[in-house]
Amino acid sequence: MITTAAFLVIMLVGVPIGLCLCISAAIYIWASGNTLLFQSFPVQLFGGVDNYGLISIPLFVLIGEVMNGGGITRRIIDMTMAMIGAMKGGLAYVNLIANMFVSSILGSATAQVAIMAQMMVPEMEKKGYDKTFAAGLTAYAGMLGPIIPPSIMFVVYSVLAQVPVGDMLAAGMVPGILLTVIFCIIIFLMGWLVYDYPRGERRTLRERFKIIVGALPTLSIPIIIVGSILAGLANPTEAAAVGVVAAILVGRFWIGELSFAQLPKMLLRAGIYSSVVLLLVAAAAVFSWVLVYGMIPQQVAAWVQTIASDPITFLLLVNVILLVIGTVIDGAPGLIMTVPILLPIATEVYGIDPVHFGVVVVINLVLGFLSPPVGLCFFVAAAVTGAKPGKMFIVTLPFFFAACALLVLLSIFPAISTFFVK
View 1 (cartoon, rainbow, N blue to C red):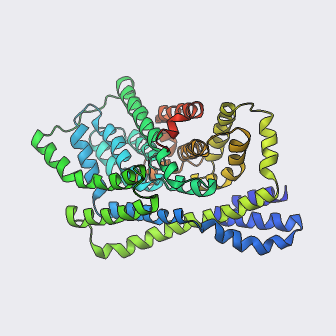
View 2 (tube, rainbow, N blue to C red):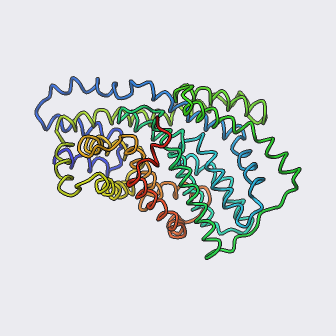
View 3 (tube, rainbow, N blue to C red):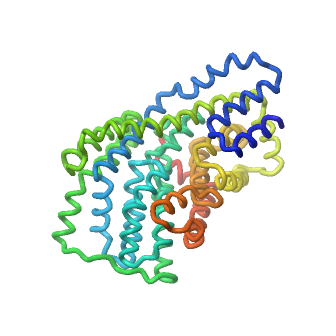
């Protein structure tokens, strides 16, 4: 109780979640009276980041930086507009499909929303779309970032759960594509029932061909990253390293917008963001160690078994719990706080595949990016576009319910997430 109270107080006063976890673990050790555990504290802290798979995180972040600075994202949007932009509501579909392509490189919801909102929302507003809807759609499209590989949250989960990073990234393929299709159906239905979407600009066949051919080399980046992982040619870290080289070559020599003078600042930004994630992972190792020592997972398992009698009921219960947690705590910290407690119950008590469980957990927490009171993606989109976060949530409620429906399907049919897992 002392540890729980200390954790809540420390978090509420605004202490970063990584430090919050470390301080709470130290308070638990002091309250337990076994001060010898302090000798193992630094070892557990270091051991949390002593993992080869974590090297992929700064590399994936760097790919995003190079893409943004090298004009690659803009080319992907132009290519998507040339392919489907002339349809009724074409820019809405372009927003979503372009986000799907970009998410296969960036892997971060907030970074993706910030980049895409700057590019897509003003364009949609200029063509007659409601700004609130355009910003809200961009926020939900950003949800694809942590699901379609590469995904930083999947990398963090793989370290926490001790499962191969490649399996987790492969597991995100089908749910990510399925979510994109569902969102496209919702756009169609909203355009038919609610909005009178404008048609996009028509281009000649020659213009389309020129734009698509000019953008094709940019697709080599996700093909290299995802294809090499799924084909077993490279592990995620190696694929990310090759992806960085590919992004630099495409941005510098094909598009011509990337300058080598920009790279030091890109490396610095990637290092700062990665250090925040790695601090969370290190803190999670200490926090998990303390939880195991205090037999917290066993106590929670005993309580859960009184409510859930089978794996599906357990997963549906987890969906509710994580959706509530995700509304007040960001994705990665929520992952770090919940996985050490819930994963042993899922695998040992209910026999759930840890890869399948990871997909359910990550999508739940990502949905928290789009749920009040935090709704981080809405706030990022609001900061970029000037739209109101509350209105965005109301206007895009059909997307929220669709994501919840996908979670139920994933809970009942694990093959959706394990289809590409060897």
